Image 1: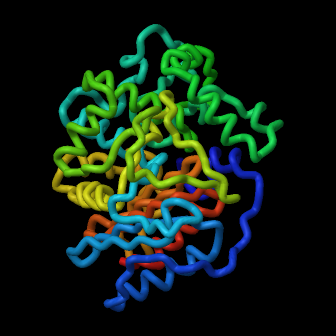
Image 2 (image 1 turned 120 degrees about the horizontal axis):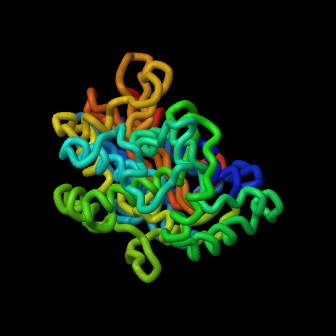
Length: 376
């Protein structure tokens, strides 16, 4: 779920978070190196600057993998996270579907410029504007023109008490099925040419995940297991669903300290329900930095905009640093979790941050934290 204040957070949180007093520090940072001290300095400031609960940080630097943990997995308990504590990845899930899309292109199963209706049952004449259809690439680079949410509940949210919106969302999406999404898709009216306007879109991510399931003939959890979990040895990563919650899953909280529901919604499963750990995400980040892999290289090619001004590849945000280094990143935010991954393939350096707290400022704070710790 993109950027600092994506539509989900704009909807979910209608309040301002104030800084809290310094909290008791719980950490496994051994403070034995200068870099340990750098990490501790910035993470301590992050933890004290808002309603934080816990954070796990994975770093690849100078050929080494490092993990630091702070805070707690359960508010009110001294339960320090570990490298195997599980967090919701939320929208970072989208990068796995786009990695599958790149693989499908390399395997010649699809073309990025294919009309998405080739992979949908039934007729959808409405999924085109002035004769220009939505293409697969548009689903992965935020230019599909589809509504951000299905069903579209903006009117409902505008009238609701902000404190109740998380529960409303949870109730709606626990009941909203894939069949209902395809049914409602017939009623969509595009207001722009696909490819012309950049807008965050969960619906596009859902469709991309469903299409990858169809192309490869298997559900998303099986595809994840085959192409990521097993080869990368991501032993503690899984798609969340009712009755299938990992034992090491942290408890998620909103900015007021309230326990939030997990995203176990069937309709958003392919787009936002993957949960993982700092250990596992280090392996995924290393995979993403290996551009000798043609799937990875393709997924990093800008398809919307230019890196010098900000671009989107296949779900990855692409920028250039002041020193001319390529930077790839993605944020994630659910009802009770915030996350951020950023890496620099040319420097073989990257950082992933996983937290069990969500408020309007959390993702921006994570971005700043990552930029302060890693300066390639």
